[in-house]
Length: 360
Image (cartoon, rainbow, N blue to C red):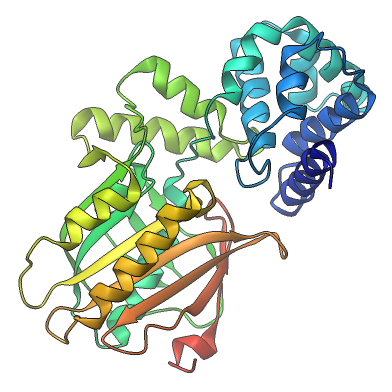
């Protein structure tokens, strides 16, 4: 398969993914970029398209479409491109002319867009913590020690490291402080989880952590929020205030090296150690992913009822365009259990009742 076809397939996949996750504006922008790629005459005249077509890695795994989408959204948020902003404001004529508008933007804003290709998007969404909480309730129901040491990789700005500060209503099961700065009540399908637990500690890492107390970094992270999901902007504002008040424990490190360090630390009896991550696995290099899996399996073989281990993840299934909440835990067979399908930003959770009953 040619490099151009790989790039094109990645953008097409992203369009379908956006449409399946209630993001028509972002989908239209990405779709319009495909048209520019198709019509581009490769003479090296535009640095943005040249880099896209000469992409050295896997354009889908590297989230190439979302890198550019973040750049376009940043231009809109800056308020300096009225024609482009008309697309984001859902102007019907602009939607029809999106191909032309996007092509003109790529030509005129080359310098502004190029830096967005340098690094993958960092999407931090507090709503995903609802799935984490549901997974912890499920683990409690399986008999694991209901006091959790949470270790999150790919934490970005650490929004989900403040999981203990939020309030959740999961199908009628409430968790967290009543006067929380952020509350979540996703549309719940299936039998609600039940139980209670406490936190021993919460910390995370990121290869390039975002400091939300820095206005420049906060604006960049905000640009990765899909514009259709307006509630996420309010959540980000609340999360920024929380970070300023009390920063989460967030380390700068690669996921595998950091996890090796954390797994080597001793812990008390009656505490379940949990590796968790959301919408980040595809961004971690394959060699790191393999090392993480090997370390978790090795640690799992040594887990005991008094010191259990679990691996909780919310990651995208690129075939179904759904996000799946899965878990592995030890002692036990350590096999993955699919607990739920969930909206990427926490709007709904489809809980799998059969799994809740412990059937694998």
